[in-house]
Image (cartoon, rainbow, N blue to C red; front, top):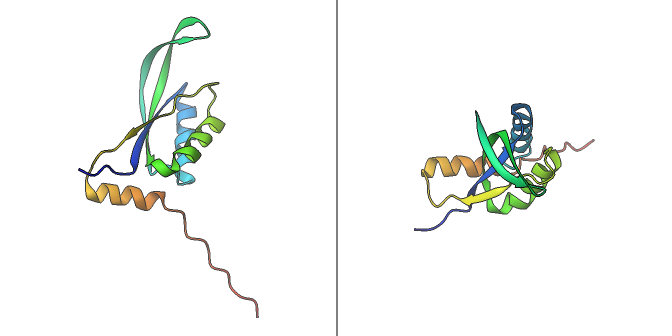
Length: 119
């Protein structure tokens, strides 16, 4: 089996508003083909600054590609309210050919508008 170049990126957000804002920007900038926000809050337990903390968070499932990951990560870090946002990329080993084709089409750079020559 040949591995695809597509990935699913997991990102936790502190609230639904932040999750929606990040999701929209990533799709608008073609860094993600699709972002699912799991609105049912996740109960997280983690260590932060030497203490065990708990929080309710929203999980984003971001579909993208390996080559876009550096730009995707930078954009998430720019938009995110956390000091250290979770950005974990998991490979998509295989999938529906039609879906993977759609995903690739969504990640392609938008065609530039052609300029008209002045006469």
